[in-house]
Figure 1 (cartoon, helix red, strand yellow):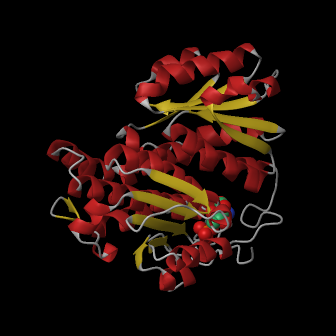
Figure 2: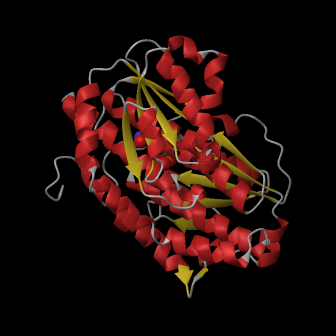
Figure 3: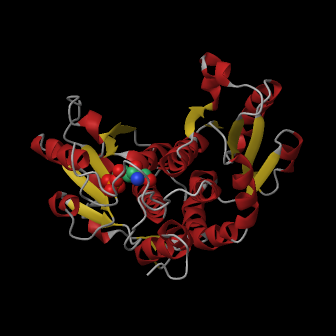
Length: 364
Ligand code: M6R
């Protein structure tokens, strides 16, 4: 049932082009984004005052990316909360707020409780869910399914990627209806989003380089991920993936925060992964890389093809194809999933069933 792959995780990593395509294509008709399941009129979409995203773990990281994309494209203010925080914090939300709960399993106890809490306050809840007929899917007012198919490995990969795609579709649609994107930009986004599957495929074809690098750093004790903007969201996910299955301590930092404390942890030969795919922030990130390097860090740079200046600064550079900056997380995360996977394999760990973890967290 692993289809010839050594682990479910690798199989699911490889299923990403298809999963992303299956999530996107049914929602694009004649060059337009159409999400029937939203069940929202244009008037309702125009009236949204803010969006509250609630989720746990990797789904929460999708929420962080969603904040950047929705605010940029649809100009709607977005808050993101861990479900375990949201449910107890008495959030201030008016009737025109839209609550989005993101969950692969649809059974995460805190996310389900957050959904009920939102509904008890009279708010409409949209679920972005993978498992059909799960509790969150049944109880949400509307459900947008991610079509990732069954995900077995505890570490999520393809569900995460399809959640990102769902969020992009919503952002493009809301931007169009609210008049915050030009016709030109709209057309471009619709075109670019459909190219993501083949670009993910291309990254997967270069997995040997990551595998080689993972073997080299498998005995690390601490790894830092730094990025700005959407690259920070990518770092959060890359770091969680690594912790979860390789048992290496790692942290993700918004690169500008380094100077406010964390840089004291950087010493000789510590691995720092610098993610730099956001053009407007590229120079800033490069200067952060220079700073950690001067403290002795070994730097893996992750950037887009064409940005070859990175080679002068990083010790090892991984390139991914370019897409619009707002969709870059979908591509930049792939090498980080592979990195976590190959480190875990190199250490001989139980990749699909890491210690102390369950696929769906059904207790608080
Ligand atoms: O099923 P859910 O999406 O609600 O699960 C949320 C988290 O438990 C989940 O994303 C977890 O962080 C993953 N194991 C990360 O790979």
